[in-house]
Length: 310
Image (cartoon, rainbow, N blue to C red; front, side, top):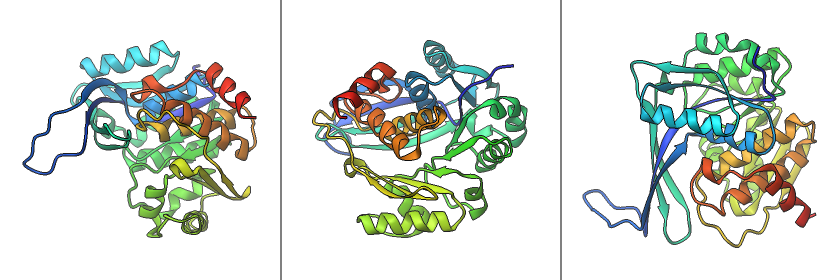
């Protein structure tokens, strides 16, 4: 039976990244400053981040029988990701994402189409139960159907597996899902969308985190970009400062890097506060390179980064 320390349920999409000075308005055409195509999707990015950060990792998803699907398989193979529960969909294509990257500061805006992964079903997740039960940490997001995410979290909790929900993109969901979550990890925008609370201040971020805990989550980690992260819940309340990164090239995938690194640290038995710092290091390294999955750092890089800042 295949097993992994970190199991990720999510999507693979082909990232089509365009760099420009700004986003065009409707009806306008702009000349770009660069283009790149590569592997992406929140789930896939997170499983690659986890694998490179040192965990035996596995992916649960659907891909199409097409060139982007082949890209996915090659990407996972290169990093030793277990793919026994990657299903091939003969009807829908592999997903794709349009990514705008600011040529000025590296900020990004994304439109994602989940493609075949939008067909993931509860029965698909139940078929992966032995893999989920063998894990130390289970991670999912909202790019695939919500009922599939709920079932994955439920099965993981049933088997005593630590559960991480990265609620991205932020969607309206019933509170029941939070009861299956050991950690919910929105960024500040997602936390605001989920709770209706302004998270532009530390106090607002704490109120939003408190709201999600009151809805059932054991702990919440609100990632705050350059300001760091807030950990709140059963483990207490902690503001974790960000690492000082002077060479920001591309912030696309930084949240996925954080979640992958965070899951690895939890799988190694590290305390949550230490796991947040480890995830922040993975994210800090990722933004210094272009792309999403290709920017995820190796464990040796993460360890060296943390030693230099200890």
